[in-house]
Image (cartoon, rainbow, N blue to C red; front, top):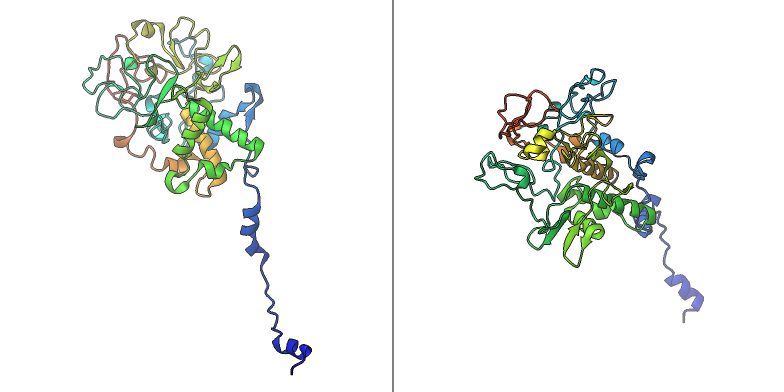
Length: 383
């Protein structure tokens, strides 16, 4: 018989000692940590603008500007007026940068040296529903004029895609195409609100919920945009998206407030001549033939040239977020996958065919009266 002590000696197995690198445990430790947005930066804000995002800072990080003239951007003494002597120097184009003194979207979609910014098509804005480029008035815009329209058609009266019948600031949600056309300041407000909420409660992983590089590059996924737009602006009772204009209402920011539109400033717009952020002359407004978008942006007073598109702010904000989440997303739009090959081929540009202007050599010009479309293409404006 074998004693218990002997049996233990015979059956005792050798102890194998293993060394585990602490680095090997990192994925397991990270997986156990609570997910959230604590590692992300706070959106920079502007204390002089109701603590709204500092849009100039955010936009210029993605779309760095040319040097601004020492006195500031050029300005006129009145809408369709005379260039002021103290503010008559235009900025000089710089390679890979954008115009700081912006008066018209006529050059949008073209090389930045011409003075424009990317169009909503270029920035992959999913709710634009732009009209096709078939030679009709309003090509590439949100206005869907019939393909056989005469050049004299009032583009502003052509319909947008997916709008609520007889209701302003409202888009239909359809099984066919999802959310209809909504202005970019709507999703801009939604993702701003969602990001700030995530930073406050640290329960939402913004990087995971907003981005998927393999399918959407450095843009926010459309499915994520749909969800946040619906969360903040959806109306379940009517299955529509309803929103306010991006202005101050009774001195307070609306739900989509975006200061850089500078719409309807006094005294420039006191004659009822402006069309949103477009400063038409009274003569153009009275004729009521030119689409308001053909009129220049703010070009009088201290805000002259400072208009910025909300879709550019949206493109800048989503890239600012993506830059924190995805190594392949640089901070500048032209260097990112989002801006790849932008403005390199005029034959495939997304610029809108312009109308004839009173002065085709002046970026602050008004549409010609009587109205004529298309532009001859012999000056600055694309024909």
